[in-house]
Length: 396
Image (cartoon, rainbow, N blue to C red; front, top):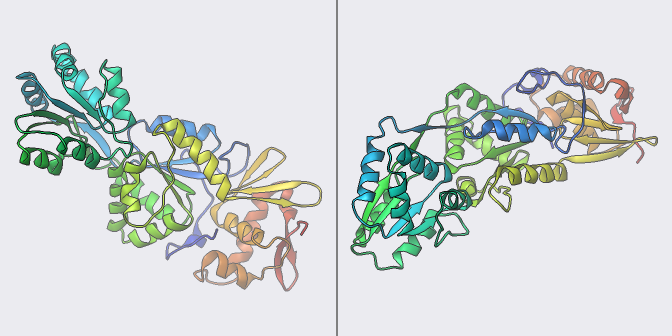
């Protein structure tokens, strides 16, 4: 894997840090030691960050959106009133957080029991496991939930029924489902759109822009997404700084995009970016998937003749101890590890690590010096071959 500056002065970057600013050094190890993971979620962000750090990852949290309750709950109150004004035939739950918010708000108005009865007498449809879990937690059972978690499958299921005169409540998820509701109305249904919350711009757009740049520089090894709108917002942020093409190239190559489910992944799949998803759309499953997939694609074992040294992400693991490396020295070590025991000249390393953007070969010498400094007692792993270049002191 190669560090690619893309005009962002990679060779001037300092040491890698965690979100708390801790410098590289010795640490205990975990399955994600050496890896930096970007988190784009706002809701349950702290839980996801904690799960990743518990496994040894360093985390950069930059929520690309935030969820806001409606500024005026009058729209939700009116929609709930319409739902209670007559029998409902179908109720569509699109998100767990939205469903719970609706039930909780109705309870606060003293209408919780009436709303639960109205939904119980209807056919309940859910979009995905989170919505299904929320519906079941409220004492209801779903009749249908598509495996794809896609709204279009819910719509196809409904359109296969006689809908004229039917009353359908649709809980929205951050934005109006105009096409969904319009298709039902065309078939003669009365559609009650239930707005519970909406998406809003991030609290810290600068953090999102920095994550975009760090993605381009390959300073993160994976990006996590828990909603399709979060992906769209991340790509929009890349557009704003003119880096959309570079971001997509990084996601297709070195930076692994991990999505909570196939519906979440759709904006990336639609632009030809393959993604990784857990079998179950849960945060724990998401983290386990990352802990399995990242080492599988970014781990190399080196035999020094006396011990095994593991290069994993931006860390070197020796005897259960981790030595975190700054981004550029880590890229130099990866380049040397691609041909263990072979001598790479300074010109070779310039081409492999800086892609021609470094000013001269002194940048290589400086990076090797920082690499040896970060390796501490294992600095001898990187040997200088006079007048030729550098190689790893490993068995071949």
